[in-house]
Length: 346
Image 1 (cartoon, rainbow, N blue to C red):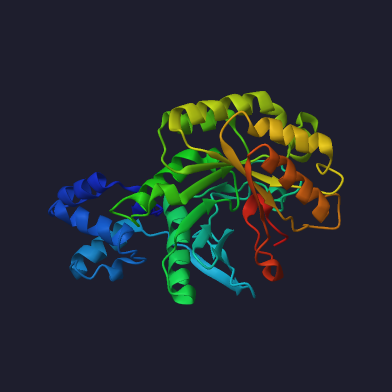
Image 2 (cartoon, rainbow, N blue to C red; image 1 turned 60 degrees about the vertical axis):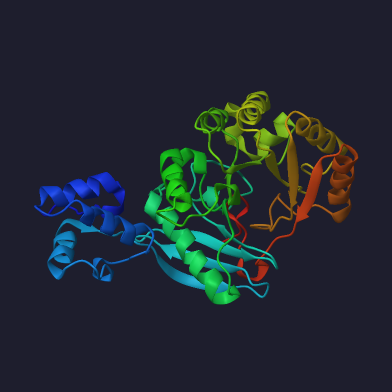
């Protein structure tokens, strides 16, 4: 029975150097291969043109590069680009390029499906198949950077982990991917241009703070009223608001980094004064800003976009308390290209 080849990107630079030494070659070959894999974005061993044919053949015999492929690409009238990305095992995830006049943002996935059960989210209706590997996360960013240069004549400026999956449930791989995205040996992007969005897992928020991460944190809150939050995001019964609050206070003490709350207002669910007052109170615990998000319904069910006057009531109450808030309009409506925790029907 033939052994399945290992994805070469799972090896560190030191492990690559050791591989060449073990195979009677020079250690610096490992440096060359590492550069091809991460900085030069090689997708096959044949791309590695400064290696001999024999060396490339040896790599081919021992390893694979499990590179992603864009299965289908859709472009919206507003410029948004949605990629259905095929993985090496034929599973599909989605990533989105969101352009504005001043920036292009990559919305990337971290899991195939999702571990959580948010009732308003299309991705949550897919069971979690597996975590994405660091290289698969990295590849999504590379693809969108290429698309940004092609369609908008500028490099990618920002990354948000708001695609399929809960990033903090794939913590080691997400951290490794971010390390390579921000490394001078990778894409060299500033961590300040990266936002990791979580549905709110207190233990992992504290771990990020302890790990002294440099990227930004966003929390999909959607209600600061416990019973409403539990209704729309049932998994939060295990993570009450008091625990979430404590973890966010811990995060801010350790990092001094302001938190962004992602907040959808739904008709008849969280569009009342009680919900508004609860959010304002919750926002006062830790320095933050609020994105009020326009919702794209995933069916004709209970979750429907709130009326404009409800959004305006939220804005007025937050601004009165000196809390920065803005309305984030949905992008790519004609191609169903909302980001993951707010994903549309696919």
